[in-house]
Image 1 (tube, one colour):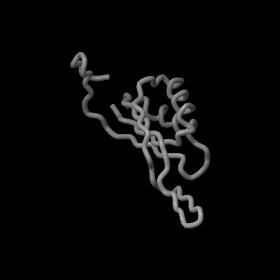
Image 2 (tube, rainbow, N blue to C red):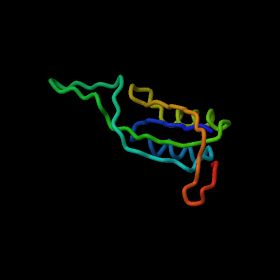
Image 3 (cartoon, rainbow, N blue to C red):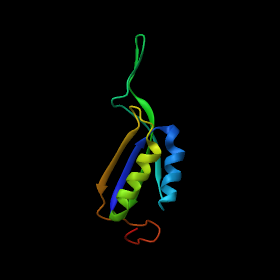
Image 4 (spheres, one colour):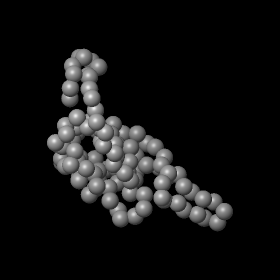
Length: 104
């Protein structure tokens, strides 16, 4: 299993969620965050280098990673600096709290 974390522009959230639903991924965790990277805006003496982003997280089977990566990338891409990042990490175990069941 893998954990996919996608940090995207807030205005792309609806498109990314729709793309993930079409790819069969319904379960998501969403967190509103602020990010800092290559995107910088300077207005006179003010420098803005932290911007609102949305962090979407999903745990998926290994064979779904490429499909979801493609869906996120296509839906989130605007072609401008600050479109976001996708991180993929291994997940060793998953448990359902209510039932104690192991696995997805």
